[in-house]
Image: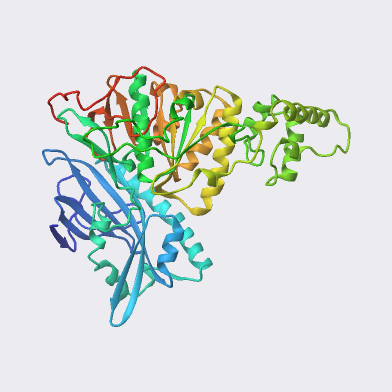
Length: 523
């Protein structure tokens, strides 16, 4: 490891863009005073501090010719902790780092809260907007940390509120430098998410391996269905190999029936052996239900076949509210009629009809069943159909998942990954109150560690919100090749690997084997 760092009134980053000037930066949550600038592991870097002793770092990403093309920005807030700091850290589910310093017989514990990293371009407005967003997130997460510390009777002081000599000890800690710059450093705790697994071969024949973190918000498009399905399922396998639980939403559930068995051969020469993955197969009424405790108003009305603005729905909502949180099925919502009003009778007839015809579709969703963790992740494969029952059950399942995750705080680390095949079925780009409800809860979950890989024939067929949330894009080239565009890397093209599990394919897809000689050429 090599580092050449200068301190004091240095620069932000020399020669990157005209708005970078010497000295103090007048940016959101500033002013920001430079602490360090120079070279680290070949990267131009700068580290800044504001009057609250918060930090933000900038690392310059360059092309092959050394020309700047983007910035990696991270913001930090430090706290002095008196008490079981590791226990506090483990209970937060936020991106944090613990630094312990021993001096003159006394131990100091510093908890570092991280927001980012965020990869941006070189325009001044992008840096301004990014710091504004990261600073707002920092204030929200600070409230979570303070609340958790109070509940655990742990004394907590923000770095701005401790003596300067104590604050200086944290800034002098050598481990802080690589951790604040977005540069990979040995010994940093990543829960194993940084492990890499093969996704295919580059045109020069080299095996391409990636961390699933690179694909935590991914959209897959292209006219070649075989390649779309294959890359989604390869990423699913890599998520499970990493230990992340997964939910697969697919009309092709039968293709996943034997994924608990290893592939007969698997990818050759890629350093990964055939393996089967634990999986369960769900459908509406079997594992996933329309949960009356949480289902959205529009989804409920559509499923029951009544007007979302009608009096009958108002009556049903009153009955549901009276027992909300304890409802197991549609039988539980019927109340004794106090007056034989028309709308009450209509609501009663609706309940009786669906109790008889669709009673098995109603039930209580249990989010914890989706979240089982282990060395190998478990897949929950849910059969989707073009039906209001699928949309209503999925919307209420996502609501239950949101209620489970919200108390655990926001995080960028994947707690669970959703893989959506034929997303144009569930998230079509149409004006629809029920799709709005589904999309709204799905978008909220992204902030709480719910990652996604979504596949569709083209961008125009799925909701724009999904495209806007995505940070990685895969475009098919032919039935066995795709182009990959990640947030922090140059685009590249690969021939997709074979599966490691016994996932079958309900479509015509060519075999990709080691006997196929890769064409010469660079990645």
